Image (cartoon, rainbow, N blue to C red; front, side, top):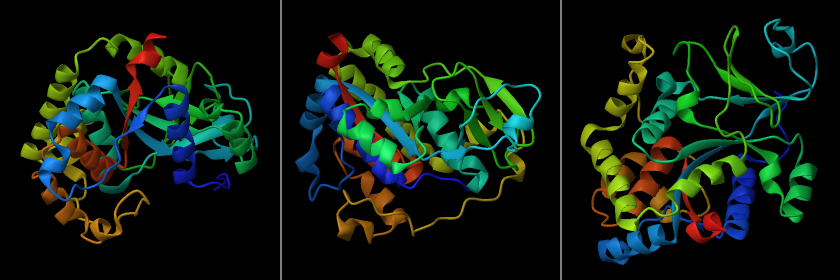
Length: 295
């Protein structure tokens, strides 16, 4: 596969730094407090008074440079090179994708953010010139409809194009709602006047429902729209999850199951939401400054 020579984490870090610098954003670092009172509701109100919450799953796109690729052989579409492919995780009946869809369906803002540069030198250049958003494309989980749960799927797109497509054997075209970060920020402007307590209630409703029903039940509700969830392999826990440097090393060693069980004891709904998003969806929670959105 023709992936660029930078890591997914490096790409995500560059985008988050741009949100921090250009949009005065904050990162809800997924870290366990040593005591519940260290992350109480006061933190929630402060974090959500500052900005609008945004969940982001970062992906590194494969880069197709030859006309022999599947997309160029598709007579129903017209592509220019390079074509980027954002691959979706097929494991456990696309469980991760289903949970991101559920997060968005619950009224929260959740996006895929995938790379649109072929090499590290381009990413470094855009990072140095504070233009990292030009290295990213954005997709909403609910706009990516999968034709089945039993085939590998990817989203094919050209940078800043009006049409993308979900591919398995054949492509299914769709029009991305907000293909760039500028579009996302315009959408978030409508939430800039939302009271922080309302944002807390929104997150709390999702977190409580998620913990009451469990991740598999939440994912099954999304799979039901596809219609063949009965044939999905049963989910198997995996404690060998990837360690992100911002986690405490001792917490990483606990394993995924123990970590999720401990989330229930944390007072802060923002911290709980950030941890659930990371462990279950490989997504990060940031806030985009209301002041920057109003500017």
